[in-house]
Length: 107
Image (cartoon, rainbow, N blue to C red; front, side, top):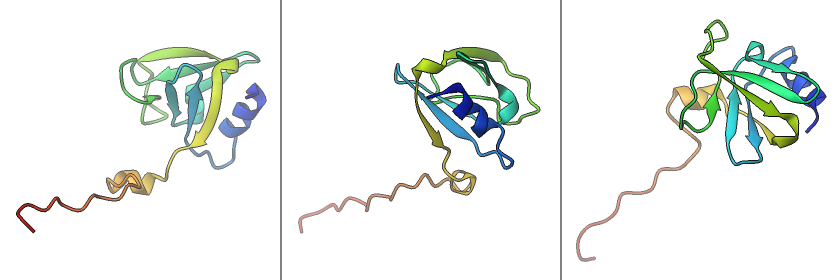
């Protein structure tokens, strides 16, 4: 991944949140373009908090002050994927089908 590619995503006229997949298996959700700064070799990401949440995420609102930060070497970005539509998240749907209820009894 090139730094310029990430800058292009952050500067899109209609910004769409995306997830950076990292070489160590972690991922970072970028919710707002003002919450990430890209240099030639690094991405400085303002985070809602450092914790065990998956993925790590920027604050929910672009106006919210970050509680912590993370410095990511661009060489460790392995994937960049758009976040699934906000409508699915708001409705509590995550794209998975529900399993049918288990049957009890003899037949």
